[in-house]
Image 1: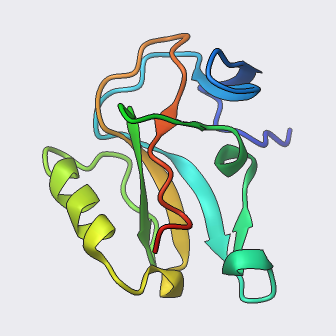
Image 2: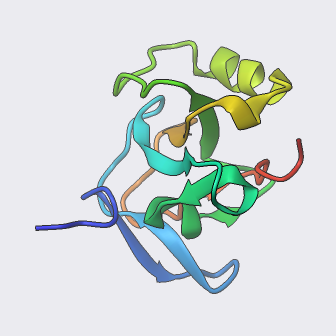
Length: 123
């Protein structure tokens, strides 16, 4: 059966704005959550947004980071997630990278909203 979102996530009303993305289970720090965008030159802003990429809300205190690479990550980044976030934010030519994806910056509890700092249009 097709599932537009990873099985541990759902969409509900957000206290921040409209609809938001929420965890159904505990997500451990440094976990790969899923793909939010896939590069494709024929689409607006050169990326196709997945259902995951359409519902997380902005926060100055995010619990996920949006990272990018040409290959998909392993499901656990280990202890170096902060370094990977820093590398991504300093990367100057991110529009050449194939995948944008979400990774947890800290443990996310069941029922907690998934929050990211918007960075897609800042580069």
